[in-house]
Image (cartoon, rainbow, N blue to C red; front, side, top):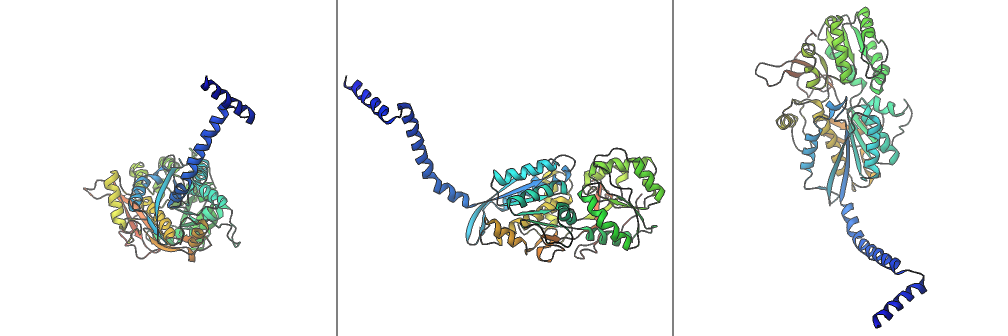
Length: 444
């Protein structure tokens, strides 16, 4: 009886306040939860302030997937080196590297960057390998005010390809790039081509993309100034399957030197068709860029791959160590081969250099989570990485640091080698610290 009256009194009390019993229970629960959440906020935010988040985007699958083949291994080395955290300005931070695969798709690269920025709340972005990946990620970071370091794209394709104008102030505040440029292409090519007598007629294969347009605008004039006659049949779209028209034009122009920056599948198709139509056998120097960087791409060409020359931005004989892991270039290559069972490739060193530069730049600040300070530090930062010296204070334009290219050539591996091909350095005019391993041999 008394219990019933108690219930009635409680019910009538809810009625007088305009709140039902069910609503009261809900509000009480929310209030209790709110108190619990509030009690956790200080510690949660304290923990978050002690964590540096680094985003990393590269192509691991799709037409550009060869560039990202070694990334899991190199990222593993970086995470191991950072296991005990990073001490900056007397404070110790935990470091998280959040990596994503662009799948060789510019739109996906942009979406991934925005996700890392808005959902993962990264403090620094690292991105590598071709304008199709690097440019959209850099643009997302510039728009969001997040510091970004990028590499393995000719700097002209990154700088002018993103809207910068020659002679005008840099439009970028948050994005910084280090890589070779057209001058490094031209210097290395001109130096290495002297090793084989030719008629100095050069055929170029330049697609209608950021890389191709950058080289068309800047490389061709440099080669012509050096006395070469350059034949350019015009831009083409990535994914073209029939190159017979271009090949006929190259033959009619009697070119004996060939270069360009096609994506790997396109070059494989083009060079097989060149062999079928009798063009490949007329070439004395075949020095392709962007493709031919990786062993599997050359092996897939069979005998057509022997003596293809190119340019090298990292090699196991480079005399530089990683400041992040302490490994020499040789140790990095050997470790990758042992871990993966695959032959080393240039981007193993390229990716390591990106992690080197990014982490060391964070260490050089007083607060690595202060985005504006990190960006300002990058504008005049200098470091020696696995690919050599990176110095943003001496760039050809603001926000850019240039690195060297050495001439290289794929040759048949020595008897007893576990691999079919060796990549040897044939020219070091861009970086005399790199040892030369052989002389340029005529193609074919």
